[in-house]
Length: 525
Image (cartoon, rainbow, N blue to C red; front, side):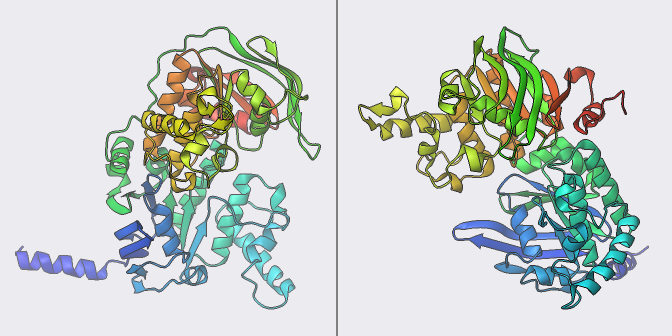
């Protein structure tokens, strides 16, 4: 075959090949001096699941926000099914066949599934015909894609997994052929995540195109056909998933080799640091959130508490940290803690050797408008090293913050920068530095790597293990089972305020923990 003939066939194949579902050409977007996206080019083939991964601040969310019409690119082109498409807002994106399922669902909790699906897509001024038409289509879509959602159920009565299916149904109801999912498994049990993957595979089989944004490399390897890697606002690689591995993807994301498995020696257990007996917690609405639980944590041990969010883990941490009330008995180094009186507060707990990294760093761990040095002093302003007589020694605090930032690799290492201007991973490092460097006997840490990129995850895990190896006790609350398995010396599973069981990580697996997280024992299953 001549070179000319071969080239002619290649050109013919290129002309007859189907256009990509999505093609972005030269997309750039800046926010003031910060360039979030720079000359990004990407093609997403029809009927595939295409993963997009990258560190915090890599530009993933900005790129998807441009595609969904939340932002307007400074320059570049968007092609949908081969056609140049202007997407000035989300309505234009929906009209172009694009749907998006956000990490934080956009649902009205006291509306039914049917009402949420129709909301914003009513077929006329009268709601009743819209609901009647939607009910029939909703049932059809639910059956076709195995979404199994009751149209008359109220959102507030549904599990997180079912709420996510409602978001998918909303997109399908609006005739989306392209579906963007942002960190879709962050709040799901393993079983719910597996069901979601089956739904996505069914959508792909029906010809839908899916873009999956996730930081979980295991999910990328399990469900995607192709994966694109972003770093510092640029697209660094697009590879077939079958031709890569987690280690290579992590290196492409971070720009260096990353240790994906936590390297830790066996625990050297000491005396009990914390003992909890018959602890119950009732919230402000009179609902019992923690129901007579018992456990202990020893020196040199990480106790991982697994479970889907909302099953009492948050309330447990609040009582232990001193800003929640409870009944029962808690002993710290043999001394009984006050659970209801004047000495049941965070300041007293800190003096008793308890440090706390809260689950929501924005709401509870930082004051975002404060500078970094001010945040490192929160809760510790009575430290003699921070005071000169009646006045705070701001220079001493800033110096101390500089040293903490260096040890914890906070970037940029600028104590005068407002907390809101750091990435999520660096915000978390600021909170960790503040609490760990107080040399606590017990560290309470909730969702340590939520919204944190893979490079920072590696660093945070090392700090937690190092504290354990110094003989400290740690209670780790995380919805990430992979994290629970990697860090914990012992695992307790919470469901509906109860501890369903304790397991040694070496003697269990995700399936068994998933059953416990869903309120079932392995015997019952």
